[in-house]
Image 1: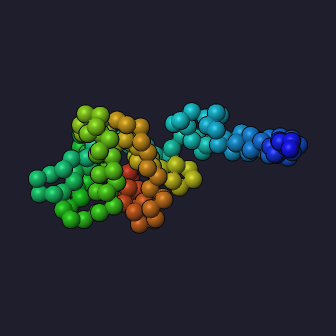
Image 2: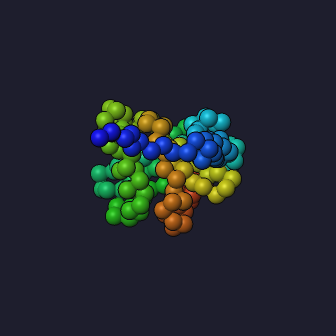
Image 3: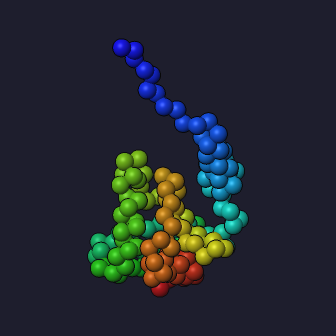
Length: 150
């Protein structure tokens, strides 16, 4: 009895066409990240950008300070603003692992397309606040637009 080679191959034309389409889509949508740098935005520079430091107070409040002036911008009362607290908590573990304290600020930005982002300058991680709904995004947007103590 003769053994037959049962290897089946994918037809070459559809394979090449599929790979070509995948590469084309990747470059057109910049899905491969080759056109822009990691910090660049397709909409250009942010409309407003500000850096903050966040401090925990003994009474459970969180104080947001302008990183440039150290001025108190807003105090978030204890047991309020759960989303803000959760977002900051999400950044705390990587900071602890890197032995980074509160001296390295967070960058808060609003972009031309309406996105609001919070970036941890210590780790480079960024959270897009729009993904969590308008109400949660607005907490950070109000903080960004606040000029003085509240």
